Length: 265
Image (cartoon, rainbow, N blue to C red; front, side, top):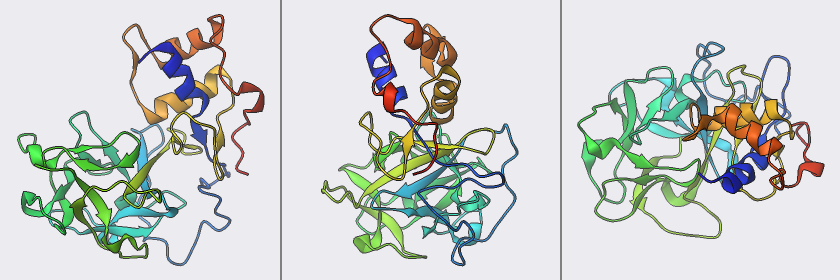
């Protein structure tokens, strides 16, 4: 990752509003909606990054496991995002090989039923197997979630592109569209459990309901470490990269004058 790319990425990393006891995401004014998923134990503070996979056309919906259960054969479907981040069935992370693992039970992965590369193939949970290449996906924080080993481009999508609680998630041929109906957004909770970060518009300006990260070293390091934990550049981790961005002449953060403190609009 080059320095210009790093500062462009850092400058437009996004943050959502924070409340004392819950994280407010996507402009929600009521985090205890009746149709939210069942609550389970929350991730301890300081644990590994936990992420929601939200549907780009309507960020109030997230990838979820049926009943927040984790086990072989558990259905993966769509459900309203739990704004308190307590629902274990909505917390995922992508490992180095491209497996989408459950944060609270990392031995379980999001997989294609029977490894069948066909339109309509069921998406479910199954025990992760390092030797099974069919369990891996391509996903870069925003955009389509593509199967790595399908003979043609196949994506994780919502049945008929209609969002509602319980909507089926299955495999389908990838298609590009202006309404981004096959796109997903990773929204990552920081280690304090107080802020969440995403890259909904890549390195472009922030759009509602997100606002830019405040342009100071601490906030930029937190955002980078939350979205890409343990990464950075060959010559250093995120603290070193961010520090150089703030001290290198002519590499000031773009849009810094308008960067907010991370308050939700």
